[in-house]
Length: 131
Image 1 (cartoon, rainbow, N blue to C red):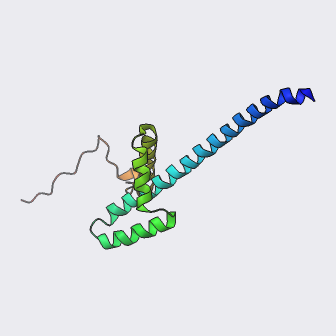
Image 2 (cartoon, rainbow, N blue to C red):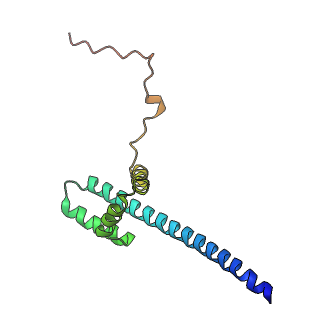
Image 3 (cartoon, rainbow, N blue to C red):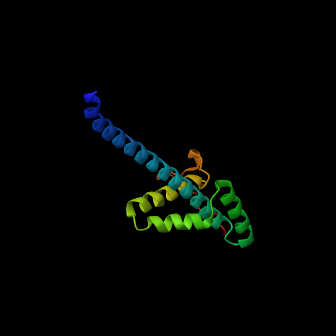
């Protein structure tokens, strides 16, 4: 029975450390998910702003549908950005994710077929003689 009294503080300390580490991992995962969600929403909003820059009513409608689809509001995104501006490492991660999502969501221009790409050795055809 005496060994239980001696082992109890050790067990409590191990349980506390284990619990703290589990909570810390949970909190980091939750923050990462939140950052990704807000970054993706922000990227969609940026692209919508560029697409509908000449039609504010269409942008407002599209923005509301994006926010509804992601389940966030503009106030939440603004508060998230404001909360992380004082922490450069977190804000930098958010800004990089936004840029990554914008780059991945932006359509690429059509590719020129390889046969139509001029090489340096080709000579352009002479201009038509107008004489």
